[in-house]
Image 1 (cartoon, rainbow over the protein chains, first blue to last red):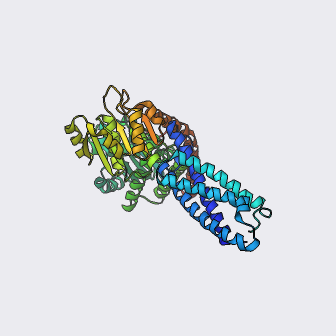
Image 2 (tube, rainbow over the protein chains, first blue to last red):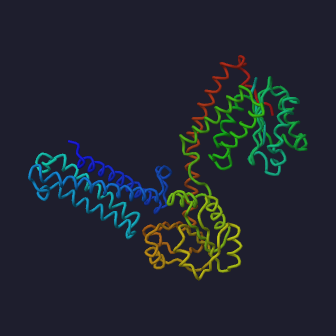
Image 3 (cartoon, chains in turn purple, orange):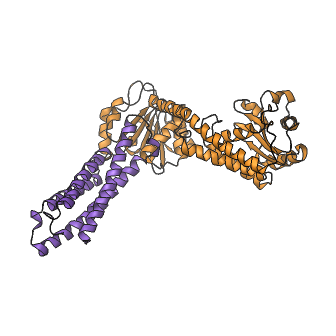
Length: 147
Length: 354
């Protein structure tokens, strides 16, 4: 069922995927520059600054979309089946994910961390997001019943 | 018609010899007229760059043409006939065709695989075409040669990777920042390589060039030359704070940028990336500064290592390039056989004229 909730959540995960790819490419490029090696990929990769920017923008967009997705998810869960979102494991994880990405975006915007650390966090964040998403698909009928 | 080429290049003749033979753009229309009227070329194209002067021509028959070309060039450059003979080369088909394909793809260049020659060949071709000096045969030949050169550039690593300390430094800065417009460069100290790198960066339209020198006079001179401004060594921290790309090139006996100084700087910069190119010997920057996050430090050995690495990769790419060119030359020769008058099968076995 294509609701605002599922569309926004899916697009949000898509944006996190972009951030993940930019993060991985950043880490490869960063390692090559730090070790003064220019591998096969070196001449094909975008600059660190553009990867960092892509990562930042993607996380911003992804977090916004996930926010909308979660809000609509919450609105639907109450009236339909009477299950509260607090009892839905997937929703709790998604909430944690949302907090994590917003935090990541905030940290990057405040420039407390930048570059490699943000890239690593966006890779870890995406692995977490994949876990949540698989949870939605796998246990959908059981725990994420209100979809 | 036969396609021939004759000329000199950076390997066969020194610069003082090449410059006498060189054609300026304004000389070309008269030269094309002379080739047509005095030498009887049906089609002709002159390629004159700082590393080579070559005349490609379509002639009805080879006999005597090379002699006439030699007289033409010698008279023009006021050379003795014998003088040219020891420096020039002259090829008949199919070597002439192979030669053009090799030249256009940068395999015959001083800097192996450079792409500037591709543009020079293209410009020379367009000029000759506009002046009605090329016909069907040279048109197809040059289009195929340019096409082959592009295939070589796209499919091999021949043109990739910078091959001088200056261009490697530029390449590294671009790998970190991308388009350098809007970024700030600082040169600390003076020195030939440092100036060379600043020049390359300034060419890319960086926002600001700051020159720091113990002698403010010297700094001001350089600042004027590169359209930047001078700053004193005492204000080094402030300058470092604002800069994105820092070139260190002082004769200081101890490191000017210590790990402690750089660490404090990075938090004040709010982790904005910093590229430091340390050209100093002894080094101006402590090696462990490079371990700081968002700091990219390269010393002179790193740069030279990358230059060598690129050279090696280009040499490896030669074989692959030659295979592509052989295929493209063969393709063109097949076209020649189908369109031109039947070729004398023995002609390609004959030794080319001197």
